[in-house]
Image 1 (cartoon, rainbow, N blue to C red):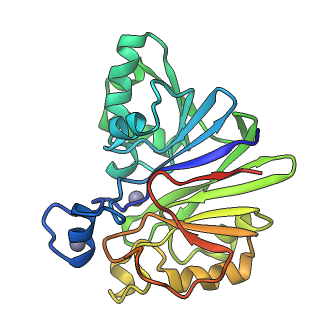
Image 2: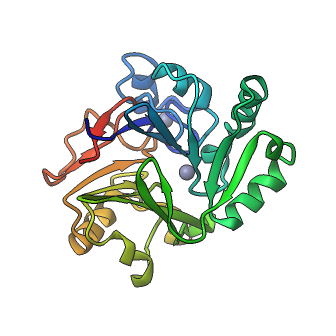
Length: 257
Ligand SMILES: [Zn+2]
Ligand SMILES: [Zn+2]
């Protein structure tokens, strides 16, 4: 069986519904729940192995939602709360199981995690992603990307013979060099907070879908999935997207083949 990718969380930093908000999308998320989105995280599974990408504050419920008790390793894109807030809970779980879990990220990301949670290095094995590294049979590389108003983040490119994909949840207006690793992909998972974001560019940190479609036209992945969706995105709306582009939903699983 091919490896699969499951979207454990497809929301933005605040999730959907946002606690303070009564907008139509947040209201729908509280009732029928099509737009209910946990903080961004994804799970790669192959055979009995599982690799978590980002470990946000909804991690515990996300594990329960797929019936998982443990993960083999964690890749982290960048050290913002919505992507690492679950690491102290993962460390707490390791304290009980006695099975340390590798947490792999760019050295700068690991340094920030260490500074934020100084005790978790006892339980999690910090693994610097400098050159390509192998996880679950994928050759994984991390490269730095522009995260706009929020600074810098990393994209992850994962390759096996016959299948290449990338997970880039937090980026905007990538430079030509930052776009290079997006070429030749079978699948691009890209963060887009809104269909069209009207806020001034200097205040923004993620692509919107209109800009993302222009990026796709340039780098031409075979398929693309937009994730990291804010309460500005309503899954009941028929956004004008080409057939190779879909919007992620919590719990959705796609083959990596
Ligand atoms: Zn984020
Ligand atoms: Zn809202």
